Length: 432
Ligand code: DLL
Image (tube, rainbow, N blue to C red; front, side, top):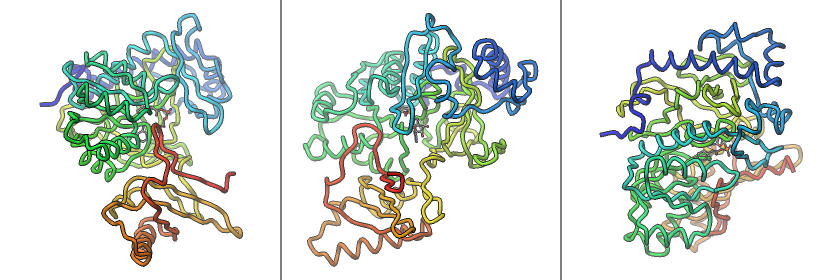
């Protein structure tokens, strides 16, 4: 039987959801027009006023917001409430430019924690569970978001933060953790460490809630097998509060978007045109309940597909596919679009672990692609000829997937640095 945290919302009819969205969108557009001069100016430039927005059908009339707008308006330019009413900020790591700083009123935090609680309950969580939160705490939204959600469900919450793997395993075994929350790459690392420490029989995990970075179905299967759990995906971004914008249910075929708080659209990333359901394109979110940082039509750069096919869990909210990569993560190599997730899929399908690195360079005016992957323990061989054969197989499989040649180097186990947060897998030397 599926569990729900807020059944009357999570299984509401399409008509009911649309009626909430229409009412909240109209209210939100007025709120932004009256309180966010930066966005009001964008609306004026497009010749739109709040009177033009009467329902979700009018959403397309509103201008987009992009990461560039967030940088322009940094730090206070997109706030919808005075500082005196805000109680928290969270922020991105800022590795690709200026930091994004998001603001929250207490009301915003309450709704965000509800979204994370829905994700925990959908993964089977109840107040009898012990939830180990091994996402980073602090400015990153992963730790605080899942921590708040876990409290709401009434679980015993272990605010571990990421890293200190030995201590993670000690608490996991001593306190009999049942639900683990962290990035999928850290989950894979923890699984490896559990195996090495011979603790597999002492862990009581039943589920994991993993997100914040792209991970393939193959990686899910590996983590599920190695930890003996069900691994659920969770999605979100700092700009929309953090994790919990969407989450997987027992069906594990996409993530339900919390449509009472966010309106999702898929657009063509080149033209900005709204695409019909089922099309692959860039995900755009409009927050309809956030007060302090009320972003309208925010372009996430994440590429995915939305579906309204009925779900066996009973939830009625639209589902998004796993992001197939970010439009700004996409590598263009020799003119060909390459998503790191395609490379990961090939490596795992061929029986290799998700410990890999992608190195892109430019030699004599031509792009080069090199993939480093760690030797899989069951393929271990001292014979160089065997290793070359394995590399050749990977080159052929990558060629079939990507359409271009990638040099492959199988390296020794443990030689690629493990990640405790979001993994850094791409080294694009063309940008250095
Ligand atoms: O990563 C929030 C989060 C924390 C989500 C914990 C899930 C769990 P940011 O650091 O702002 O926020 O990064 C947001 O990460 O636009 C996606 O590109 C990527 N991302 C987040 N979740 C997933 C996921 C957090 N489940 C950016 N699958 C987003 C693939 C994801 N990519």
